[in-house]
Length: 58
Image 1 (cartoon, one colour):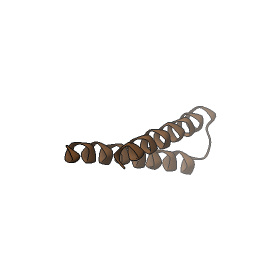
Image 2 (image 1 turned 120 degrees about the vertical axis):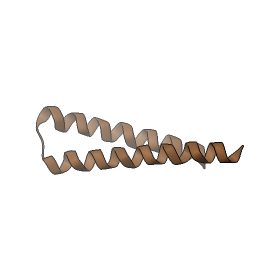
Image 3 (image 1 turned 90 degrees about the vertical axis):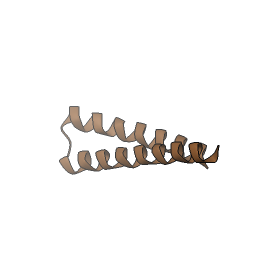
Image 4 (image 1 turned 180 degrees about the vertical axis):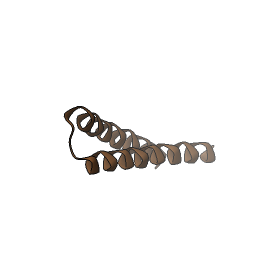
């Protein structure tokens, strides 16, 4: 479960970061930029939970 969460967090963070950069340079909608930041936060939380599960497991 911890590996899945870590990989999921990295993938979500990466795709959201791509959308954030696209919004930053292409001057898209500000709502999409805020949404991409919130999704990056979600990916970071998933990676943090994976780290906690890894340390608790051992």
